[in-house]
Length: 84
Image (cartoon, rainbow, N blue to C red; front, side):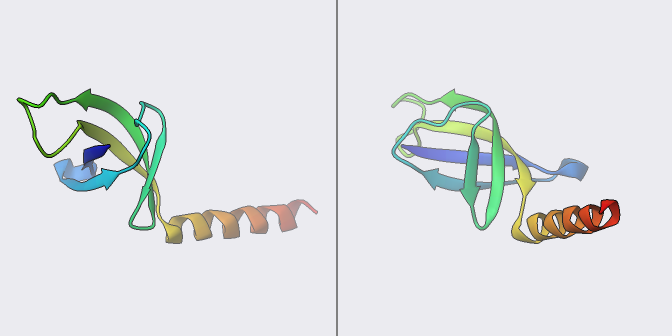
């Protein structure tokens, strides 16, 4: 299935990208693209008369990128050392 993913950012800006996968995407699931993780907040199916390019529009929020995940891991390790 092919999705038009729209990501809202703080400050009112937005970005979008195409995403393809075999299974249907559902609200609450996660999509990984461009080394980032996105949580799906809504899925709007599109019929053939609405789009010949995409099966659905997905609205998502960015959850984490590689730098943020590494920073969280480092912070967690630091907190663990403090409690030892």
